[in-house]
Image (cartoon, rainbow, N blue to C red; front, side, top):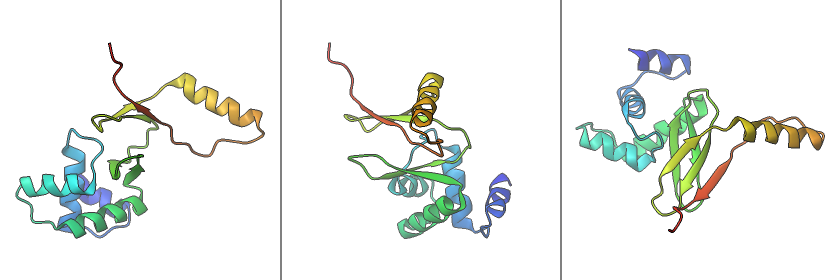
Amino acid sequence: MVENSELRKAGLKVTLPRVKILQMLDSTEQRHMSAEDVYKALMEAGEDVGLATVYRVLTQFEAAGLVVRHNFDGGHAVFELADGGHHDHMVNMESGEVIEFFDSEIEKRQKEIVAEHGFELVDHNLVLYVRKKSK
């Protein structure tokens, strides 16, 4: 199973809760899930994994680099699988929906600004908080 090898590569012991949570994160259409979202999805799928276990496993996954935790303003932490590709986020302030995007011009401009100030860019996280335009 792919999940087993991913866990081993990350230095984690293969346990049933870890496999179930990794499968849930990998198979869901919702890319950004809170621990509560993962727990509810597991319960709906008939899996017996406690909420405390979900929190603990997600924290282990984050430390191992399998997931990325985001703490968007006005909300709780959400997790997404670390796929290695950089992207930025928009958060719909009315619905809580998280929209991923990538813009090469924004990325280029950020590097230029950093260089203009005599630095090199190590990492960044851009989050735009949005709402639908009123007509």
